[in-house]
Length: 159
Image (cartoon, rainbow, N blue to C red; front, side, top):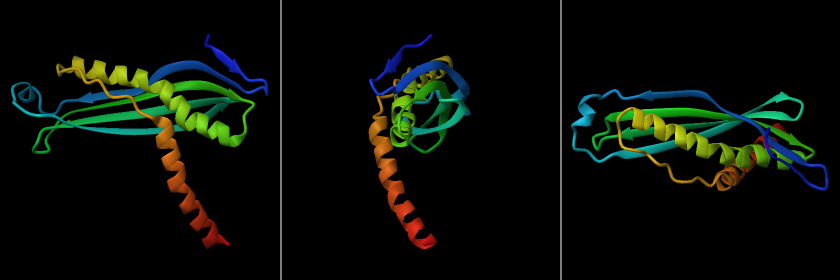
């Protein structure tokens, strides 16, 4: 079972399970790519979403897509992982739950997704790809700030 944190106010957070929901690896230019002299251009795309799976239980899915291209834009390989986890989140107000699911849970999942991506790339016979750490709290805050003006303008249109 997982560790559980309980605050004096009854707030609880516990990791229940971590698993891979989906993964894929494509190398459309193999075996030619193994003999090319090329400098990789790496594009990282991150996305996360969550859903309710039971009372106070949430599934959080972190999608990581890495596309590596040659200088001319040809895709050398594409690796995708949907790393998921089930989390108990209880006794928190809605804003704290949203932040927990939007930033803290993806931070927990990212090292697992990073290892899965690296493993796929190595199994595809390419050099290891160690992704740099990601500040999910900053991404969450930026996303929240960008959606706030849109929500305000929607409120003005509706009213």
